[in-house]
Length: 204
Image (cartoon, rainbow, N blue to C red):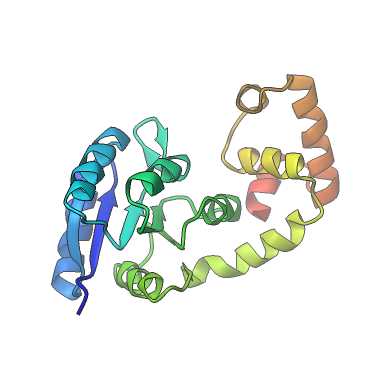
């Protein structure tokens, strides 16, 4: 029987210990390694790869110090090409969930979920399926229906709004002018029928 292994990337040591202890006590999954920063994760996974060990699943938080775990998944894929990804985050907005799935995650659960949810997610992903925490799925379906009316650029702006970014931050990240961002924001509001940024967050 193939050993079930996972790697844990979260910048809170107590969170890592709590998760790994629970999984060890309640499942057959084995912790192959862990890291508290993206740099540590690269070093650890590189060492594992040298011994031909590729964790079946890498559990990734989104906020890792000042880095974005979803963006970092591309680098993790290069270091551990056979691994699948489960995003484990405090964020529950549908835009972030969809961004994680678009980036290649096979699963998404919130840190407020019951502990057994992470084991269910690991087992489901190991079977080659996608796992989304049930309480998040309905909003995700609504999000997809709403956002199909937006252009790719409008979707990008809308997602950044749901993540709490200001117009200046969005302009810097997208390398466009603040005026262009304001135009996109206006179009997003018109197409989704909202009047404020908070309304958009609630919608998503």
